[in-house]
Image (cartoon, rainbow, N blue to C red; front, side, top):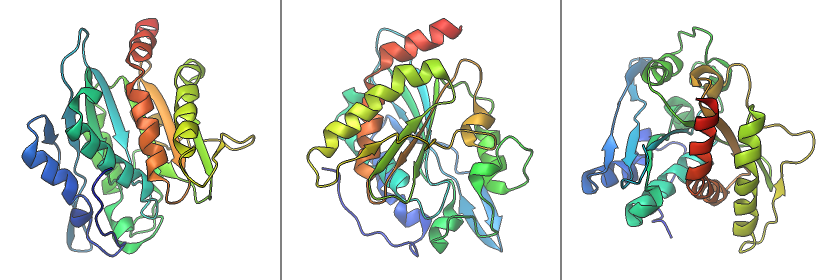
Length: 258
């Protein structure tokens, strides 16, 4: 089980992410990438990213970018990435054949304030791909647009008690990846007290204009949005582990589109 640590919305973003910085000190294949500093009302903030380089396999590394914390009151995705990194440090072979770029906290001011929006009232999920001057948006776009990813995954929480949603705007990608993700969450939830409602009718994951995947994706990039209920970071973790098991599907997906 990943190590536990105290969390408060009033804690600083750096304290929240300290377990990732500690892994970067210990593990040579876990790297701190772009700090991406910016200033809000005279205070300095960063959008750190971390790269996990898995053991080599018999194919070119599958490159995935995973984003969390676009909304300051959605802590589940950030915690899932912290637990994910801790698990990959303990079991490096889980990331064999992957290069993973993790953005665990895209809205640090919202996190510190305990608010959905940024400190200046912007919804980061609605401003990508629109030439936005918002520093969080422009820094994420600038840092990612030039990179080539095989997959982009965005983590959210949806404020429900038991609804888990996985979706992709690409029909082929949804067919390949959504079923194993939902099975993994359902299997994991067997050990808990809450039974998940998976992709309920009429509920759609936040894949659309203004979303981070819409802004950063290319034709041959797989896109997936995962939404967990409150206090269910472990469900997102089980979904991410299920995705890592799908290397052959990633390779087939990019081959078909190439």
